[in-house]
Length: 181
Length: 181
Image (cartoon, rainbow over all chains, first blue to last red; front, top):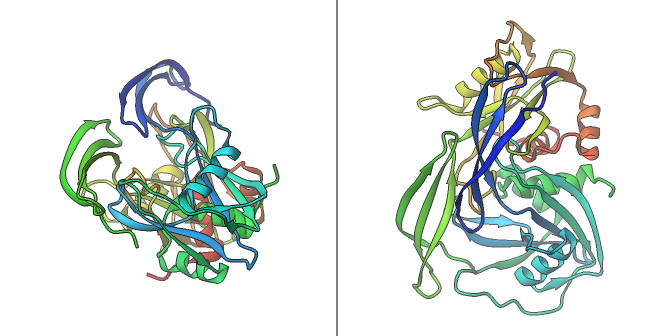
């Protein structure tokens, strides 16, 4: 049975705006030797499965700098300082799509990559969503909103049209593995 | 409809062994203004759903420095230079668990986080797996292998015992959304 490593020292190395890097100096539980590991430290994230009264899911298309591609995703983003995950979910859905809802619940939570990334991503389900305002994006944002049926979502995952891992995990919770909170 | 940004310059900033950081200087398609974005650049990864003749899935427990927790995962790891994803999958399964298989296929591929991470993770299914050798770990590794049934896997995802996002996406492909390659 593996044991936890003991943290001796954590040093913040570089700040890159949407994440920072950290060196963790830790002690091996097997033999007491000391090793350095490097970790990416972003804020926690949320994403939202927003469903209309007709059962369509609110999807977005946007350009992503990490992969240099236009992706097909659900709304989501970083939790601001002082904000709860639930507050962030409401804000991101409104800002990115103009949709709002009065029926919210958390249905999942994942660790994007425990190997070297420290944060969590919370998945919320918003039911009975309606478009209640226009969106307005600044020069670094350009987001298209589309309403997509559940069978089309599943087909898009099968065909790789939706390939964003955190989005696929969110659909796993929505279609199959909803967790109670 | 969003358009791609044009890359003007890409600068490698820091090398952290299992990932590096990059500054991408890019031109907005909306108004031609220039912006810097910071990106994490790891090698591509693989992960493996390894199934025994009795239908159990080969799971591992190990300590993860990113989240400072012992995680419940499937085998996987970084693709070495000059290695194909399929070769890496065979190597990682053997190194981490001592299991091998003669029946392999790719069933999925994800982008772990298109927002600021550049790599892909390939998911392989290995059927009819048998334990054919012992594992031997160095001082930084300590991995426990467990054989788990599909209903237990689904329950672990529902209860948050399995919360590794890339692992959950892999099980999405295995149980529901297998892709043909």
